[in-house]
Amino acid sequence: MKPDDIKINDWMRILFGDAPYEFMIEVVIRILFIYILLVVSMRLMGRRMEAMSTRNELIAMVSLAAAIGVPMLSPDRGLLPAVVIAIVVIGIQHLIAWLTTKSPKNELILIGDVSTLVMDGRLQTSDMQRNRITRERLLSQLRSESIINLATVERMYMESNGEFTTLIYDDEVDRKGLCVLPEFDSEYRKEFKYADDAFACKSCGNVIDKKPSEGNKCSACGANDWERAIISNK
Image 1 (cartoon, rainbow, N blue to C red):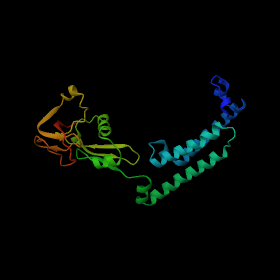
Image 2 (cartoon, rainbow, N blue to C red; image 1 turned 90 degrees about the vertical axis):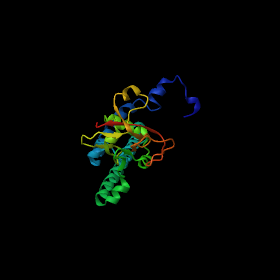
Image 3 (tube, rainbow, N blue to C red; image 1 turned 45 degrees about the horizontal axis):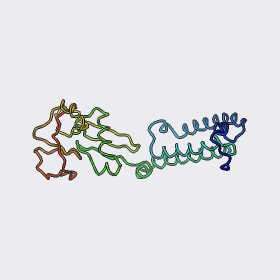
Image 4 (cartoon, one colour; image 1 turned 30 degrees about the vertical axis):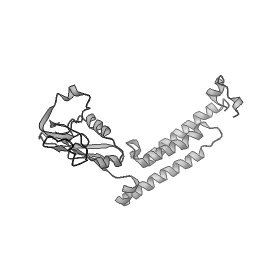
């Protein structure tokens, strides 16, 4: 298209493009064909595609989306290339599934590993950095699960598909730990009980049983920022 052909008030071109009006009927046929192709492809790739997708499954979905976009709207593109691409994507997904069932090593390489973000009430900063999970992102996830005291979290995993799995202590012990509530919400923070003899590192949640002196660095992460530990079993 030449620059002179572009006019801002050419509504017919903006709405219908340069294709003839008859192509609108063909678009309906193309959409129906692509829709059926996607339904068949998703069924052949398994029920995992209906749940939270892994990295490989997300790549497969993006590849299918890229394959169907052009032939669905472009009158000079046929539908057969989209079918070929769908067959290739489905084949790759079945190959990955077969390889991962044959060896745990293949599963680790192709799908990824589980990472531990919280262990025994303390943030695992090295794993968080490796997975690009910020402290605030993790704490917001804990708050969404109604967790106030970090010390009540026994384990928090980041699964290979990006989901979080949180395991909390099921006993009734009052544990001292870092309060995960936002610091600006001071009025709500006052409603909880705090320890007089325990302080938590704001960076990782490590707890010490004495008031930190000036320059006292956390033995777990090396930070020098403390607050009074909260006491809660919920």
